[in-house]
Length: 227
Picture 1: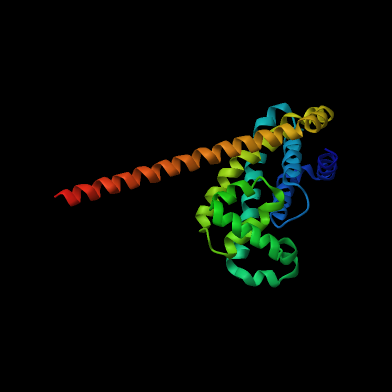
Picture 2: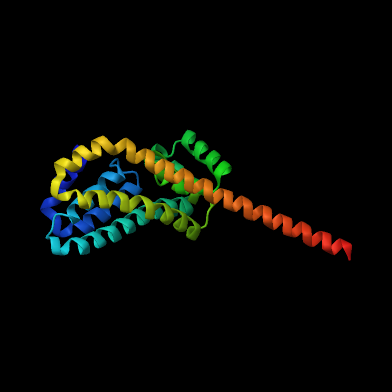
C-alpha cells in the first residue's frame, strides 16, 4: 500500500491531469516500467473517488475508460514492436533485458502448449505480460485483432477490479490500506480461481465442439459411403 500512497501523493498536485497521467503511466507499464499495474489502477481509482459525491460516478466512468484504454494501448505497443521488428528486436539491449533467450524459450513453450490462451493468463502475471505480448508479435503466431480480443477479454476482468477497489476506498485510505494488506492474498487466489475456471470451461467447450464436428463429419462420410 505504501507504493499506492506514494503514487497518489505524487499525482494529487496534478489532479486536473490525473486521467492523462494514469493513461501515460499505464502505457509505460506496457513497456516494462517497474511499477505494478495494480498499483497504478488502484491509485487512479482513489483519484476518481476524491472529488465531490455528485461527480463520483462520472469520475469513475472516465477513470475506467482511461485505464482500460491505457492498458490495451500499452500491451498493443509491445505486440506491434515485436511484429514490426521481429527477432531483430532482441539485438536492442533494453529489450534483451526484458526478453532474455531463456524467457523467450519459456514463452514459446507456453504458446506451443496452450495457444492464444497464454495471452489471457499473461495479462494477470506482471513478470510474464510484456515478454508474452512481445513474443506474440515477433513470432506472428497471433493476428492483431485476435491479440486485442484476448487481451481485452482479460482486461475487462482485471481493470475494473482494481479501479473500483481504489474508488470506493478513496475516502478512507487507512482502512483501504489495511484491507488491501489483509486481502491481497485472497484477491490473488480469487482471481486465479476465476481465471482457471474460465479457461477450463472455454477449453472444454472448444473440445466438445471439435468432437461434435468430427462426429458430424464421420456421419456424413458414412452416409456418403452407404449411397
